[in-house]
Image 1 (spheres, rainbow, N blue to C red):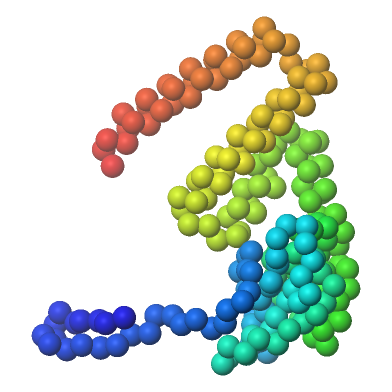
Image 2 (image 1 turned 180 degrees about the vertical axis):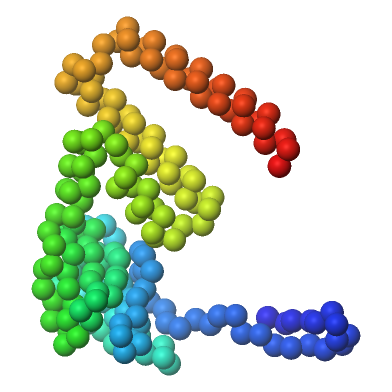
Length: 198
């Protein structure tokens, strides 16, 4: 990137913003560093598939060191306080611990089930989804779209479940939907009126 400084006419400097460190990875979430500064990246592959080498360690010069561990569809990486690298799998909803000597052990099983149970028991689907969507580092517009999609799908699923168990009656449901839409439209109108001053 070429940089010009207004205060120094004619002065030009070169600024390296970023460089490609490595290629040939399929990173679903952010990579992670261990305590010694080694970078870990995933090669997740397609959903419900197992690739021969799902994890790599990348050196400062970009060389990839393959880690042929038994983790299908590695998704997220996190360094634990014990120095182990924790790897989630979207294939089996488990979290694995990669020890410093590259041994892998199953750490937690069926992680997705826990958030599903909380949502089903409380009817509050924002608690599991919002912190997760915030944590994966989406841009502002992407986050808003992801939240909208998550809330829409969750609301439809919750509504279908309530109808299935007989907790919602058609007449009352229609009245509630109409009232909810009126409240939303009034809220939007109030927001537009008050937002003019900002």
